[in-house]
Length: 118
Image (cartoon, rainbow, N blue to C red; front, side, top):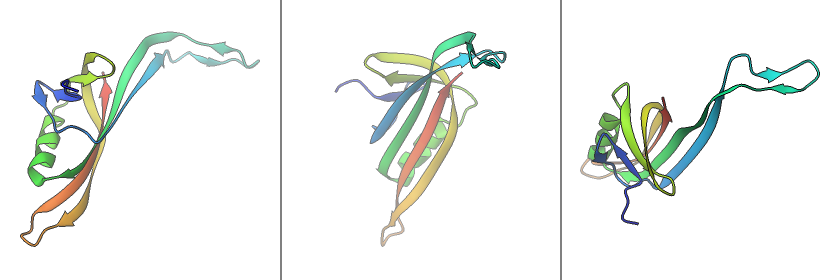
């Protein structure tokens, strides 16, 4: 595939080894079930995207580049989901797992980050 899976503010990131796009609807505060169990729903926004991206075997420099890309409070994301979509997002949970330390002190990491649409 020639299309990048994930671009943040115009910068193409390393290709994720895991990539999940979720979509959710947002409901008004007064939505919910009545005493009789009937759903009273007031959807205020549909198809809000959440991306769970994971990378394996990253160098320290690659981890730093991803962390820098998701550091701002908000950033533009182009992501592939059948077509390429654009959304203003923020980063949620992110984690890095140390996989290996080379004899020269060089480290290899796995990293995950969740990006949520505003």
